Length: 410
Image (cartoon, rainbow, N blue to C red; front, side, top):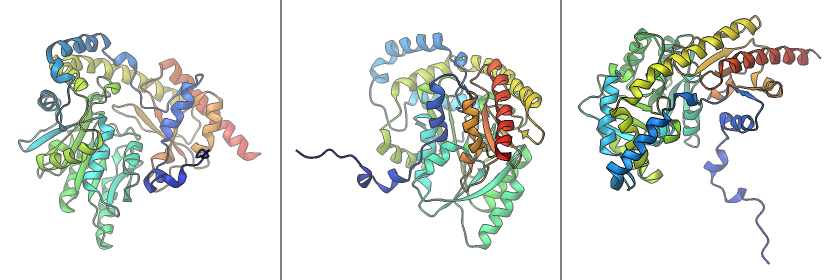
């Protein structure tokens, strides 16, 4: 009898061996066991899901578009959805140029993966904020890219430091290819780039001939007014690749996102996507298009904004009430996250064990630093927990800080 294989390591590719588990995904496993207030995931509040309307649309889609909605679709996407998302984007201030095209992706996470593989080779340099989105770091795993990182402050990417880093790279003969940024309601930072910095970023992209990859999942749910046009709207040379999603404004479970970019870029992304999943599910594309067409999303957005504003205010209030001296945080104008800077003597990853024991989870900030750092930072999500859970959870984190410091003294 042949013996059963007990270790498959020698069979795995170098890529499979190099991939690390997502901190967020691992934390969600703990949270699912119950008894833990979660500030870890970026989950929308289920009350924002228009379940009745989606149910009605799903039936209508089967009856009206059944032969197409249940069939294979072009890799680029269902034409009905593509045309509808162009109208929806324009209506919400996202410029779609005549030479632009749209490709539908299986959530915006796939857009990150596809764009990364369309543009980046091993050894290429990419510019990101520091911290940056964990999902982008996951999408870049195995590509062998190098990072040029730019710190954030309460207003997002420090474009003055971006200019310094680009100048320094040029002096060293380094030619970055792309800037990846979440300029509005940053994840994890919760920051929003002011208009003067947006213009400066675009000027630098022109000067140094960079592709700008704008990730905009939260631009539809800003709950404070500010002059923050998408970078895509400031683009005059076709260098911005823009991506967004219905995950925060309709349903993440439907897994529908999109990329808007010059048609030549979209054509190349389409070829890359063909080898990944052929196409995004036709059925959910039709449902999402009808939800946009019927105004269901537009009608829902004010409720989402109000709900998340109340939760943000509750979290900021709790941070003010419970956090010890030396802790500071961002004040987001939208989105789902607050970024917290702890005093230097605190390691948020080490402290997480204490926090989970006390019944609260957060994401240690070092997970969002591609080149290391951020040991004294954390990301807190306010969109999913209730206001009561927000206050209690922040209180438990404050208690964890106290216990952590006491443990270091002993």
